[in-house]
Image (cartoon, rainbow, N blue to C red; front, side, top):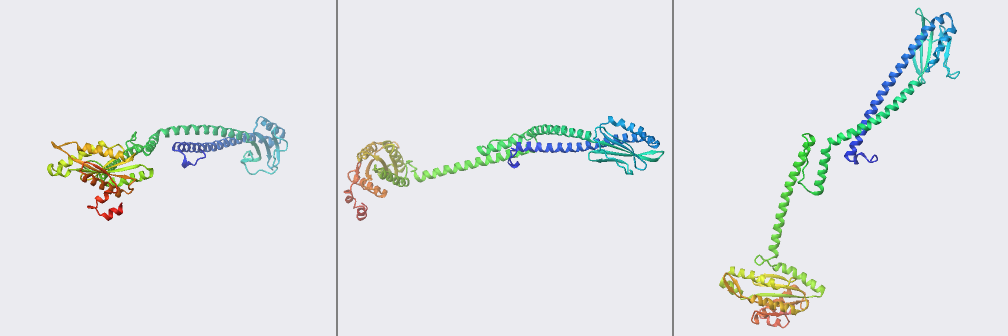
Length: 442
């Protein structure tokens, strides 16, 4: 997680990182400022104590300097042995010569610097971890010498180091606790944002625009949730309208497609669909080597029904004929109304032409039965022509022409009959067809 770029982190991890970083920086800066104040205060405290000690000793040693009592001065300086931080003390005369000096017993010999020059400046000076205090020695307002005190800052440095280590540890603990607390508080405050994000993801993946966000408060997040819900409502309304429009268009397309491919009266496939499917059926028959037959069915005496009973009765008769034909055919057969009183049936995958002949006989028998139309008993017959594929032709137009020739042969034979096309029927049809064209086509 740490190695990831901040922009690629999830929001929760990014908030956690920002909380930890911000809290740590704030506490570290606060700790640094507090450490500086503590160090400055400790330094001022040590300097003040050392200055007070130096002045007190200078005041007590001044009479000894005036009377030249070196032993008494050394004895008084020797009392500093109990002060572990004081390194050395030196008493200078008025001319700058050393009157008495003392060094802490723990100091190696020769490490105490003693200046033989006269001291003309007084005060405190920090140098290389040591504090040097120089105070004047006055007798009735006249300077008679100077007192120099050197004190080690090791104890105060150790105290500051301990303070820094403890402070850093406490800062890290406080940073962690602050980050955890801020993280939880921010998660609670940003819970609506995460909920809204999850909802948006569900809407994007499920396309369910009925989902809605909870409005938990009247703040910026609450207004965001309301705006998001309004957006979903608009999208849902637009989606519903679009779905309805698409449904209407598809229904209209299906209706137009049915009108284009199916007869509106009998609901059978029309001539247009017949021309499209016969090409496919013939292609499959040629590829598989199966026998396929085409039945051209023309009703007998249908014109008489229209003339005597009217076209409405004729339409009802065509519906009954379509139902009877559909009941006789096999499930694999396809029945078409080519127009008027003409029908066609495609019989795929026949074992022999005898099956087509038997089916033609059943069709003639079923249509020969009387039909009750508008309270009147009506009778029609059927003349059927049969053409074979791929024995006689593999061209749809020629196959239909052959079936038509066979149908007229059945009518000339007395109607209510069927005929299977053969070449001998061409001569009989020359009276009504173009003989050269038919001969060439055949």
